[in-house]
Length: 327
Figure 1 (cartoon, rainbow, N blue to C red):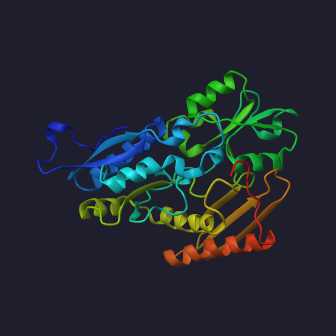
Figure 2 (cartoon, helix red, strand yellow; figure 1 turned 135 degrees about the vertical axis):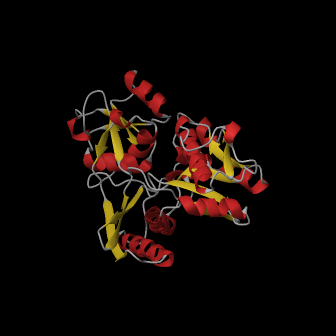
Figure 3 (spheres, helix red, strand yellow; figure 1 turned 90 degrees about the vertical axis):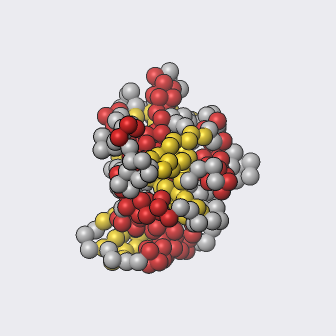
């Protein structure tokens, strides 16, 4: 979607420079990249113009199996990471929940624009909520977290591996391959398709760390003008959430091998981080929370994430459940 504030080519500033924006080529990824391009042009006063450079990642080519069977979260970022390192692009745009807990050396987050709805969305032609599905219903997901959370709530349903973009998943539902599935409300909202799903309260299903957040990555030695423009679209509250949630994730696992969820809640004068780890079959759940002041530094927010993770690890007896098949 083009920002109406952006000047057409024939009225662009004569000193305007292109910023090459690396992104996955999915419809959602392209929408997010275009939003960043529009925001950058506005933030730079027209000095920068985004050029979208789409990539097909390894993860995009895997449509029928779990990510964990093929390498985890990095499947959606490796090609983009390499392009950024080579200088083929100036920045990369990611759904933060797909980014490994530790960035490659020499790369840094230049901006976290304001977070979109972080809740999960429930999609089904048969029911408006998980509780309404009949016994033995098939729920499609390739996420260990969603699988475990589903089984914790409904141990009587069957989990089937279910991947793909919005259109693919809707088609699979129509074809009867599953009775229900999940999609992040953030992605649906950005695509103008939020009406397709019923938001799930976070009290029922805590989202993935970073869900609803776009992370813009640049090289640590990247262009100063680009860095300044990115600072102009950074959202302080969203950066706080990204910092705490990713620190929590990094302290526990950081890949797709363990069912992990976390969200930083705004409690007025305080931040509250709630995190959880589940057994793969959903029969056990370890949850912890912690708080800090709203004016906490990034270091303090990261410490909050690590502290909550430590509480969970202690509660679980020091050993977290992990998917080990084919590893």
